[in-house]
Picture 1: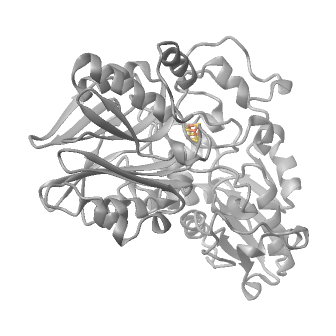
Picture 2: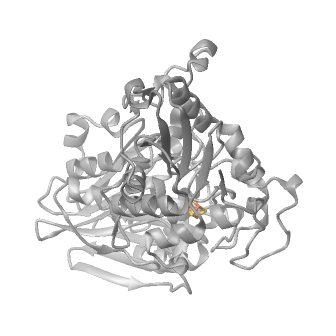
Length: 501
Ligand code: SF4
């Protein structure tokens, strides 16, 4: 979905956050955390932070901006200690302010607790109301602070942060992959559905490392040991590593978008290398939607592996047709109207020689609002392509996400409003083929019961409170039946077919 950022100011669907943690006496934990966060930068670019403990006290540094802009030699040298956690943030709840940057720190009677969270609690509002009624004061507006304050209160009552976390987990509904730091331990906590990834690694035979994705282990030379299991709390301290399975769930619900778009292709999730999973999706897509053409091109960067797979399966040549400028920061000056009309060229420029007079298959991972895709199709046509056939490695995106991916309201999702033929017309393609849900599962080779597919099916594995649900639905459509409290319910699909040629 890289191309969705082409409008610069209004990316269509955005990542949530990246978390990291390390227990490593004798290691330069602040620098290792810095490099871990650098590898997780794709999961959030609004703010970042590192909290370090030397066994006696916790120091915190967090700022708005990219990891490379926030930390310098001086900052990292000042953050001395043996254990640390870190965070890169993109807001899905709470505003974009320094107060909401993470890690966040709270005090309890035994010291301090720092917390870094990836995901989204669907019952955060109700929990916050309860805490406020009990006299709790909040400094920020995110669900992560609700979690932190609940842990601190629980620790005061139970005398242990670890026990407090275990006591809080049954009260948290939604997605959470969390790293927690106290003066003398690092914890990793994952919700019982395992919506967001979280893994455990080992560095130099003795340091224990936690990260949202295994690419952050690779970058510091750590080996992937295993995933933190859904519902599990893993604690690393002076006694080694111990695990507690706090909650079991009847099913898992790993976000399928981690495979399609969010995770880095060099990460391994659920035993699958993400790049390979995307390549297989491209193969499956070519089986479902073959087309006569001269060349297969990816929309860079996330469309690459699926385009490779499509080319392999179809026997069509693979080529590069769009060159991406990789150096556009989030604070990029907004294009004026004239530049906007030049379209996406600021970020993508077509390779005219590769496209002219050719029938092009353009492969990407998703269409959210459709505006960006129509500009890219236009760009390819302008460069002289004879036909532009669009192939999407995911099914139509029809339902909003409540579990930590910042997507549009339902009324803004083109897949919710339009049939595939209407979308084809809107983006100006000669043909449009989406992967079916069945094809997605087949391509990934992962059972349906292990994945969240809610943005394609409307079946939400974790029940969404009514007030939260209504905030993202288009009530005029009348497709949402009210009053359902069950955990997983299917909503009607607006379009009977996944393909339009
Ligand atoms: S609704 Fe979609 S984006 Fe959100 S967790 Fe489920 S699969 Fe992922």
